[in-house]
Length: 411
Ligand SMILES: Cc1cc2nc3c(=O)[nH]c(=O)nc-3n(C[C@H](O)[C@H](O)[C@H](O)COP(=O)(O)O)c2cc1C
Image (tube, rainbow, N blue to C red; front, side, top):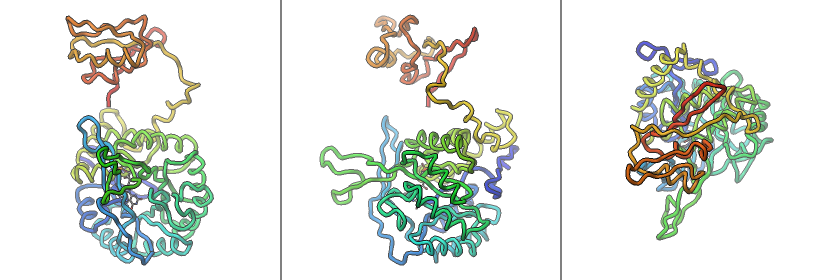
């Protein structure tokens, strides 16, 4: 219950007090930190990925880099982290401690193995410790162990189906999520393989392999480790559009529960992710950048949204947008034109530049009044001027039959 609105959900038979979960990542890698996250109000945690390997996990520092145009520092976050340095021996104890401290919250754990017996041992041990859910990382951007060496396990359809089958065989009635990568040719094929393997759901998705940037004075990639760099896993707002597409494609084609992950930075993002088919939303970069207190805004924003929209439960949002997603061929072609909202215009001229050099030269610039003049004959309604206007002073008018709609999109 969040104040007067119940924002709880049922996720794979697990009651979550809200749809927001901390994903397998640094915020769930230390017992005290995960504990504080749950105390702050997150509905559950997925402890950072562990394995049965006895070799130490060789982490390299600095492991983080970021990029953010236009004054925003973290639009995308890149990391060269690996799985947890904590062995399954430690994770089992943590599951017990957290489950005892927070019996009403979801305590999940993430695993990665090489051989069948490794995957199954991890599952048996976590089950015995009382875990509510098991997530399998098939998508570490630094590569997998075992079945698909050198690439991500979810990039192999055969390995995805086979390993999912091993895990589910051991997990029995404990829910299993397979965490996939969007970096494949056909995401639907991967989702079918997960389903054939018997998993209960898919986590879509993990970080995405990237090269975050290059220092143009030294030509060292970011992050630079004594002059050398490599490919990073990209997370944060930069990847949200990829997450939306990944989830929408899976939800439209495969009957399987989806845990949404990748790029959610606000309650609005979470609503979008659920609207394309996710049943809950996992977060990593948001709490890493702004801390656990962000859960307060997520809960309050969602509660108000549900009340404003007249929805009974967050579950009413799931998949709501799917029916409006079409292929390009199937899209209608309404009459649409740009319109200036004169009193909002600050005379910056950005719309003129965009239309003049990247549109259809439908905007003339009046240097005396510092105002754009839109020529409706030349305007085709591409909406580029609306995208660049910093103060939402341009809206699109759309005529369908004889009715007129207006829309302003800015994110
Ligand atoms: C530093 C760092 C370490 C991560 N480690 C893991 C991991 O061990 N296992 C895993 O499945 N995902 C891991 N992730 C991925 C996150 O759980 C999450 O899937 C990803 O960051 C996308 O979500 P976001 O955009 O909300 O951050 C890691 C992410 C970061 C930034």
